[in-house]
Length: 256
Image (tube, rainbow, N blue to C red):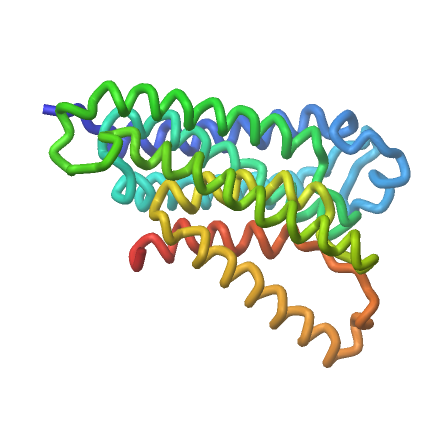
């Protein structure tokens, strides 16, 4: 019989990793932003160039809530084996960074490499570990998954590659047409979007893209209607990507 990840273990892992991720971002915040002008544009930053208590509490709470919900919802869409542990850690890391990335991108239109890249690299490594663990359990799996318990991880890796290619094409097309388009931070973040949404279902990225673009269009139209934005204004696309991703993970998982 294949060992399963208990709810208590899932909660401990996801909440613990999310809070640790948030703490590390707070501790390394000046190094992460690496720009005095950028730090001054961020509201709520104190004299030591770190977010104050209220901002830190709110941003950490976002990660706490997302990771707590993920602990209940995500395992049901995975392999239900110990191969899910690395995947849950990856979900938790992204959850812990979500509030910070959202706040920073809205404030200074930047997704810091020093947050996005470590999480992306670690998540890819964790998915590879899960794949190796899962394939080793393939002959014991009774779920008839095409790569055994490693199927969610393999799906996630394929989805990450597909999402990256899609966003690179959009970025290159925008550059060639000399139009304002998504930045490289968004392109790099797309890897995590692909990992998380495709791990739950091969159709996850499609739903995520529909949500991301739908939310962005509605929000931009509202801003234009209220004259808070002009057509030529740049927008931060990262928050839409994060909202679409977590909506897919936490709500869409029930329908995928």
